[in-house]
Image (cartoon, rainbow, N blue to C red; front, side, top):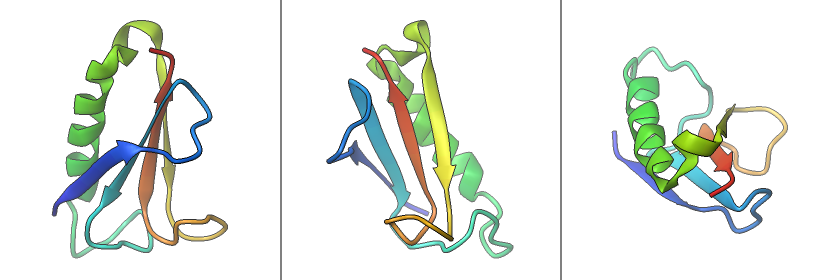
Length: 80
């Protein structure tokens, strides 16, 4: 599964990346794609190279329910 990683258009921190699977997933667990989280966190790990690993960061996983983006996505936020 391919992932997209790009700056959030409404950042809440100096570094605010949005990580989204290119194929929409409606919920965090999908029995047909068991490696989704592994692939998402590979992208998170690559995003940490923006200097976040030394200053701290937050990883927020959203999927389904009350959100603007109606499929699984991750916010990687921190100070650069």
